[in-house]
Image 1 (cartoon, helix red, strand yellow):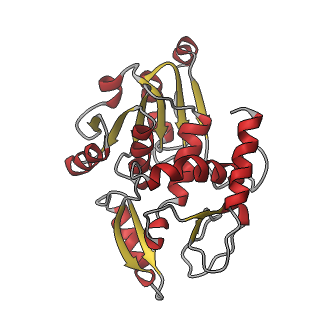
Image 2: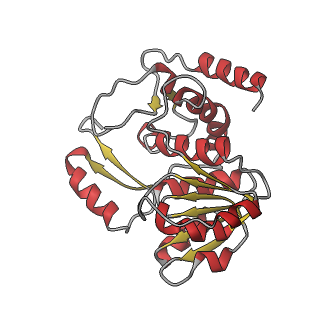
Length: 266
């Protein structure tokens, strides 16, 4: 991204990012969102996208900021490339499918059930691999230009097998452990990159900051949401008092997308 593009994006964000009293907004927060009230830096506030309800908008800021910053801003996914998303039925996964398809990419996902696979296909996934029955590395060897990985160590070797020449492996989670063996020869031969990223520990301002990410999401992704190319995927809406039940649902791996916790006023 050129400096002029960055400056224009920052200006657009600043012009749009001064909400008035009564405006409906959503925001990227630092964490601990199980609350009726939050304090957020002004540069992390976003307008609710056109056509999205205030409640459903709560399902967007974190996944949008994570997906856009990783596969678009850092990994540079382009039209015609192939994205592999591990955990296609998750909140991150369902969002990444839609973003990649909106950009003109081919999308492959890994899932743990046929039902999740069907839902991912409905969202636009071109290839679905059930990791309980298939080896994704065998199915997709050398095909993935970008991989969005939540597993970490246990998938490292097979992710490298799956990368195409010039591929980018973006690791955002460690569900499969913190260490793994890497074939350095394959990495060098493929001119591939392994990138570790998250959003939560980024600074509020400066290069690669939350402010930059929010500005990019507002300027570049929100128009895609407004025209219906990307939508919040909400599996359930539960009262805030039922947060424990929400965690049970998530841990069961039976849901596709996000679960929203609603404060009493809603």
